[in-house]
Length: 402
Image (cartoon, rainbow, N blue to C red; front, side, top):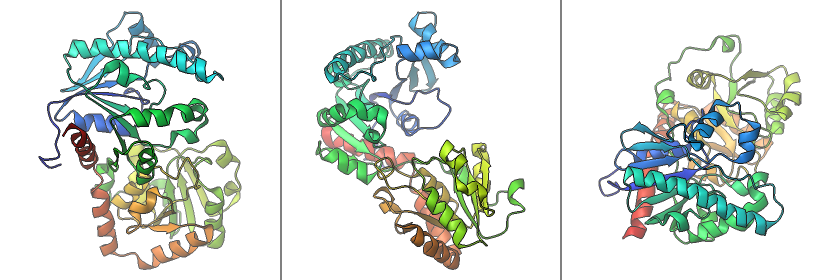
């Protein structure tokens, strides 16, 4: 990140869907860590709602939030220099099930006000002034945050097409576009989502995606996992959650059936559709289940071609495929489904529109792989850092500050 791009000595409040104490990684946590290198950052967990409190009262994470709400525990925690995490001390109502849009919006405003009160207390305690508000794709609980917190700049971050998911679609179709319109700027991690935001707000920017690739770039000589030693070459592999909502089972079946000498290895947890699928009856398809993240580079290193056989839908069309960066960081040839979000990878991957094209492109990828192509893939993936992505966010902020 250059000196002209860098934003420094600002007070930034980050709100959104992903609490800091979740086990899985998230874009927003990485963005917070990067921003805190030169600014003060308050990362706010989503507030506890009443139904979650009742249904999950024995969950240690819920118990902690209950203690904070009851005043038994301090909800403001310092994570590192310049970075704090807030557990809100307000309970909000569970309202997404309501069929009345008017009643939902009335109660949602009250939820927003309670949530904002908790954030204001932390802002005062930290001495934050002239805050920049960064909303990570939360169109409900943070819809009125601009009005209640009165930030210098409000930012809406679009990283998934949320309206394709039933939970968000129910009321989100009436709210998200309004939130995009009233935000000072919108930033998105894919060109598809930037175009979507741009329909409602001309100050919408594509800011790319950062990835944590160190463990992949440093593992090109990783030892072959024990359960891969008996599998013959070539190996066509996928690493990640096996979800029928996102992945095309028919493509995987066609790959295995078209070339019996190819072995298809799938590493990751399965949903029920995958567990019941015919793939389990095919001799050259292997399911290796969930693995510790630190083991994944060794599996990718064993693959001859990596695949990302997505279904093209509203859920997937705009999503940035982080796993493709992980594949490329290890120099692997990648065959993936052609989507708008994949367009930025077009020079370094093979993009298929049909299951038949998958076969042709895998054959091509196997035939023309070379050290030169591997090096180009690695260099391309290495450009997708959180420093670069946050630098683009800073440019967007400066465009309205100026």
